[in-house]
Image (tube, rainbow, N blue to C red; front, top):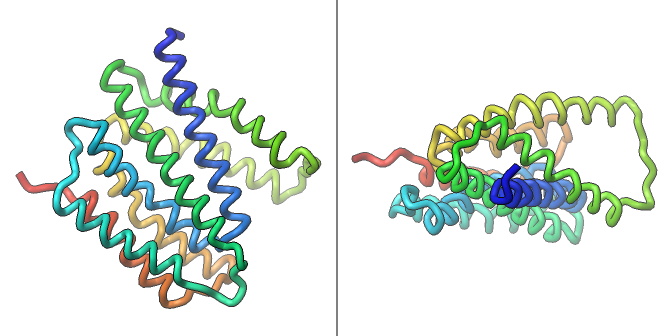
Amino acid sequence: MHGRDLKHGIAIGFLFAVDFVFLYLGAAYTDASRSIIFLYTHALWVAVGAHFLLSDDRLTPMKVLGMVLSFLGLLSVFGSHSANLRADHWIGDLLEVAAAASWAGCTICIKKFIRQRPISHYQALFSQLFFSIPAMAVCRLVLESDRGVRLDTAVVSALAYQTVVVAFFSYILWFWMIHNYTVTRLTTFTFLAPLFGVLLSGIILHEPLPLLLWIGLILVAAGIYLVNKPQRT
């Protein structure tokens, strides 16, 4: 691997690791329904970063309107409270936003690099996963050194799901889209994820879903749609 490729691989691996560390740490403090909404502000951070770093993906008045709506949605979600919400839930909320920003940074970094050097989406996936291992290993030692390894049915099932469905099928599809679409337009494929996340949080985890949470979800989803709405030429 060339020196430039190595630096790029380390960068996207580090951002990927930071994304997941913040994601899982945040989930320990706040509800899953709140986490999914904050995490999928990824599209907004992509739009901002692409404006400054990618010459053909600039902000437009429609995108700015979408970002304003989404910001109002975030305020609504942040202001929503349920009876079982932790007092320090704001820590988890901020960690989920940080995860979204890290995810966006990784997306933009990959898109910018593949314009300068042709690489396949398989290479991008391998680099991200391989170079994230050292960063995640360090976080494991720092944050969970006092915890043992538990391999019961739930843990093995979760690991299998993360390995086969998330790290293999979904990421191959995601990197294929990064190679074939602009980074803001590709998030059109994901703007419904917060809706499904909130619904499943209520159905599976039985989390309370207050009105302000739904208002925030609608505003964030509408904002992401406007950010990624194809522009007429």
